[in-house]
Length: 409
Image (cartoon, rainbow, N blue to C red; front, top):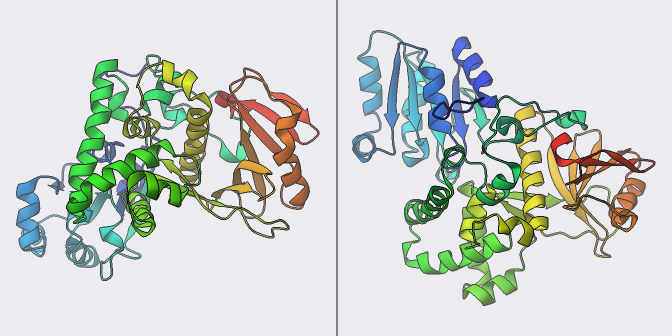
């Protein structure tokens, strides 16, 4: 059993340790509070020669903002080649030129983290091409929470690396799976999530020079959280929030760039039918989504929004597994204008895996319409379809369709 104060094991830890042993540099992206700092400190803690620049510390940030090249002078004053940890590197994008110089001249090796891609995508920012390996850290996956049993879909195989008996799957549907939430009592979990939303608004949005729009953005954020897992109706959002449609689009781009939402596009390759074209958005963590939507964070929420929460959980888990597998898999959804729909389409490159998500313990034949149509339309690429359920046993629903309990997915 995981110790109460011991950090949970993470799948990415093995990759980071291997990278450090090989002497490579890395850039790890991920939203706030997913455990990037804890993970890197744990991995680097085994080394003697490390230096840390936590850019969330105002004093450290101010010193390097004034003169980003100062890091070169400080590293060159050291006689050995250290591993340098720069936390929240996006706060000073200009520092990456100095990082490149030090890597190229074999003065130091680096591990950098970031919780926003927005500043890093701006014109002229050095993204260290060919010099760092890139990773992404998500909130805890089902394997990191000890939820997984036998994985039925081998292409998305996962195992358990922790056992967290005190935090149930139903808890995760209400409070999410940020590492800091797991061992907190209910009252503190609510405060943690509310604080997360407030810090995000204060730091990220004001950092984007949107402080004059903070009220409008706050209204939009609540509505976007409520609509999470759907394709947003921009006209309705504009009317309800009092924000123009162009501003709504820009706000969604901001949420993507600050890693708060995951975008899932419709699958349209070789489409014979008229396909729905708007993307769907999922907040990166269910607890953060529930808090931003101002929903009651109690066990009753699972019954009130079971379908939405369960779909959210499964989609996020698929996204996490695709990143962990580190192959060029992509996730889509499929929906025709005639109403046929499949919640998830995992594109393996040479094959497709269509997946429906049903929150009930049973699946009725009428609910297989979308899967059957998809399997017929894409029979050269997809041979099996799956339905992820809240049920307890696997079941064959049709010749090429299986129902799978969520914990055996």
